[in-house]
Length: 218
Image 1 (cartoon, rainbow, N blue to C red):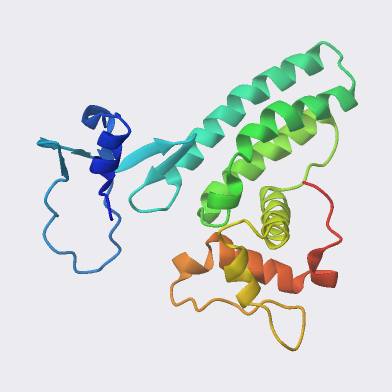
Image 2: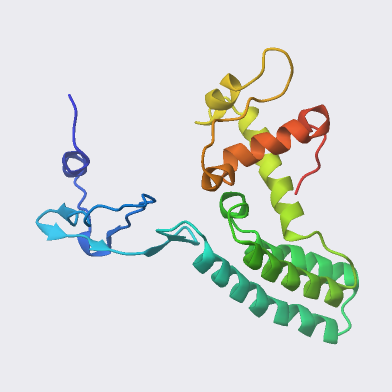
């Protein structure tokens, strides 16, 4: 017997709050059809939005991550202020680095595995400029945005490959080459797809020595 989501909610004595529900349409077709009819739940139309914040990440219907990058940059700049304040109190470089990794970097690289490879070059440059400012405050050279994202992407791929319960484990296992330890690349026809997690992670994995298993933690 199959239950619709609304029937299942009723069986669990739960009620969907339509006022807090949002609909976002992602359509990359060049010739777009007429706008779809609004989603109707329990007799109420669901509001259609172009941007939605989910688990701290700003999703937009163009998937260009510009709004999310702006939010990350602003958050990083506000936390850089406190890093400078600590330096004005003559805090040692080691403590400044710990503060950067725990407070500043945690904001800059939050969920970067999802969006870090798909942002525009100008947005990457802005974040790298902020990282260089933080490095000058601490007195050390910090890894650029691209290097951190690549390292975390590869480490995430390895954790998926080592976890049989992960939903992507079987997909990656089926991509293994029968002649080597490399992973076969997924068929990609759009640059937008090439920059997503799996194609990027597979490319990094195939380029890494010993299948990337000697990497350090991020």
